[in-house]
Image (cartoon, rainbow, N blue to C red; front, side, top):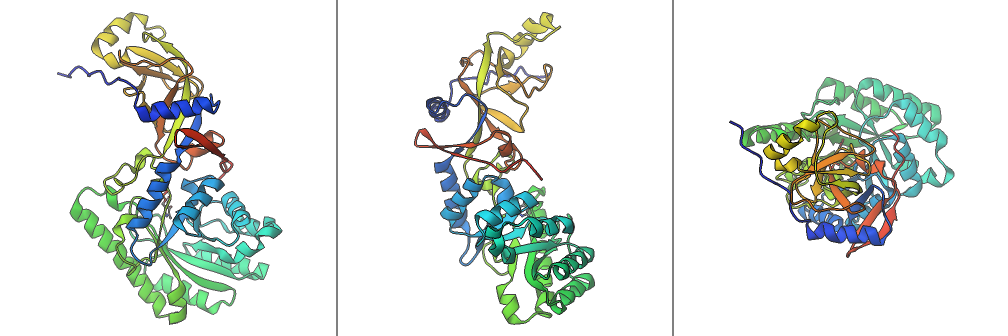
Length: 404
Ligand SMILES: Cc1ncc(COP(=O)(O)O)c(C=O)c1O
C-alpha cells in the first residue's frame, strides 16, 4: 500500500530570504534570473584549481549566454578562449572580444560561415583569424575549402572526433587521413586541431563501464593525434588545439597527454542537470526569482471542488496554493521548501499554480525561487540578469538575443 506523503513545507532558507530582500530593495517585481556572483567566482576558482598544469580552459559561451557574464568568467579565469555555437553569438563575440579565440562547438552550415564574413563589422576584422571552424565530414571540408577560395581567406579548421558520443565526427582511419592530407595540401586551410566531446561517460551505469568508455575515448583521441603526427610537422602539432570535455567530464583530465584544453560553462552556474558526484565542489549559482501573485489557504481544482477535502487529507503538500508571476520554465521550485507543481491543474506560462503544505507561509509580492534545469535556453527568457552580491543586486547583465 502507498504510504502517505509527509509534509515537506517549512520556513524559508535565510539565503533566499536575503536574496528576496535584495530584489525588493532593487525594485524588482517581475520574473528575474539571478546570479550569485560570489558563488560564481567560487565555481570558477574550483574549476581552475582542478585543472592540471598547462591545461587550458575554454569558456562555453552558449551555457553562459550573456556578454558581461562571459567577460567576467574570462577575467576571473584568465582565459581568452571561447567555444561558440551559433552565428549571432560568434559575430557578437567577434566584435566584443576580437582577440579571443573562438572554437565552434558544432559545425555551422557553410552558408552561415559565409554570412559571418559578409556581415562582420570592421571592428571585428581581427577576429577572423581567431576562429576555428569545426569540420565533421569530408563533405563539410569540401564546402569550407570552396568558401576559403571564394573569399580569398585562410580558414583554420578543427576536426570533430567521435570519441564515443556518436554525435558525428571522424574516427581514426582512411577518411580522417584523406581530410588531413587535403588540409595540408590546401594553402588556404590551416589545421587547427581536434575536438572530442564525451559527456555520455558519467551517465554510464557502473564504474567499470565508465572506466572503459573513458579509456576508449582517449584511445580514439590518441590514435587521431598519431595519425595527424604522421602528416604534419612537429611545429604544427605543438601548436594545435586538443579540445575535450565539458562540465560533466572536465575533472577526468589529470594531465595534458591527450587534451591540452577543456571546455566548460554550465558548472559555473550549476543548473540542476549538473548535480552530479563529480561536480560536487560546484555550488548552485543561478536562480529564477518570481513574485507570488496570489496566496490561497486551500487548493481547489476547477470542476473538482468535491475532491478538495480528500486530497488535503491524503497529501498535506497540496494544502495551500500559490499563483506565481509567469511559470512553465525548465526549472524546479526550491524555496520556500516543499513547493510542487499541480499536475491536474496543469502548467501555465502566465500564472502557474504551485502547491505547498500547512507550514507554507508566503504572501503576495514575496518571491518564489527556482533552480533552472539548464542554462543555455532558460537564461534567455528573463531579460537582463540580476547580479547578486553581499546582500544586494549590484549589477544587471544583458543576455544574448534568443536566436539560434
Ligand atoms: C562540444 C561541446 N563541448 C563542451 C560542452 C560543455 O558545455 P557545458 O560545460 O556547459 O556542459 C558542450 C555542451 O553542449 C559541447 O557541445
